[in-house]
Image 1: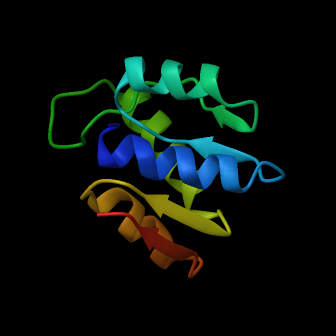
Image 2 (image 1 turned 180 degrees about the vertical axis):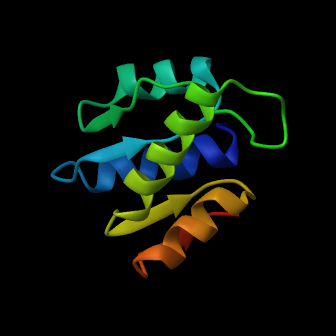
Length: 100
């Protein structure tokens, strides 16, 4: 069968086809695959970087914008262990749903 993350994403998106989802993921291959599979999934065209790595100022600025955009979500769905969505949910008390 499908890996559990893929199964959970598929069930969520297909179950809420009237909802627009914005996908934040640091894997470009996964981003393209999910974006191409579902008409109600949008992406932001930036490279997600990890702030502990050496990055350009523009990459860090892009990620801060990404973080603020995510923090304004009504609901944040998190499919892997990451502090990014957890902290983003604190800013405006967005609902955080975890699938791990």
